Length: 391
Ligand code: NZQ
Ligand code: ZN
Image (cartoon, rainbow, N blue to C red; front, side, top):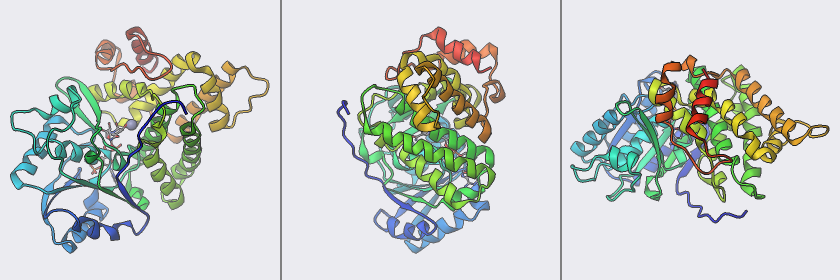
């Protein structure tokens, strides 16, 4: 392990079928007025909302509702949430939902106490500045496994006007959720499309970190174990979404895939996310599906620059025997296995299916940030080549 790092993850996780029992107690430690953030209403249909309200009542809190957070939360909605928080002087923000609600809650949390003349979008998602004000504490009740937002300090916001979807991973540890309640049963009501998108998102979070660096690094062994667990559980969950064991493993994999652990000592890549987020900014498509559509063309393009690692991936994750194969053949077989699994679980495999077309290629390239930490730094022509291969 050659790279230096600091590992500090302050989020308290409460996991399992009875996890909600802890919510009232957890809330007791924070201020009186709680902004409850949720999405389009799934939590009202599946009963999670009622459980949250009961916990808030038990903890004696004053509740401020903030509903309607859309998948891929927008800058307009963020500004609305900041106003709600300011008008009501909220002391705590409780996100009940998937990554969109939690990311949004963090975005509100870092912005409420800014001077009114500072634009949060510009400060945090364009200039990547850190909070210069007190951050309102955030907690989460997770209803969808995928992003890892429940135990990280990332927040992704979409600006449709400028066609930019940007993730800011804050350095300030106050942005991590104080606690997260994770009951795998809460994910049973997810539409299959969302479950599968979440599974691919988890896989890609791991590969984004795994495919970087050439040193012998414990993080890579952890990543291989997580990927094997995810592939195994995903095959069960797509056949039987109510298999608790599979859904619990998927949820736990999601958290560990992006809570900074497997990034320790790594440069990390994140180019698939940059390509996927450009697609998302143009089409508003489901995050995990945007990644599935671009990942294989990207990995096939960069594979020659990191062939040894791709060969290791083939053997250690997909169980492909190295005997009789060159490193290149093994690496290619590993990517074929990943492609077959991506299809098998039901991911979208092209950006056309997500609403992109040939006329958007230049604009998609304009929206794609180029990362430096992977095996190859893309040129603009290569970015276009990847999008074209995914049409
Ligand atoms: O709006 P509701 O009614 O809640 O419905 C949601 C939404 O339509 C639904 N859903 C969630 N839990 C459900 C449920 N439906 C039924 N039963 C349940 N239990 O699922 C839909 C998608 O939810 P969303 O929160 O958008 O999904 P996800 O968790 O994938 O979050 C996506 C957002 O997170 C960002 C993405 O870019 C995207 O904006 N990401 C955040 C990251 C981070 N913070 O570190 C990293 C990721 O790479 C990602 O970029
Ligand atoms: Zn992701």
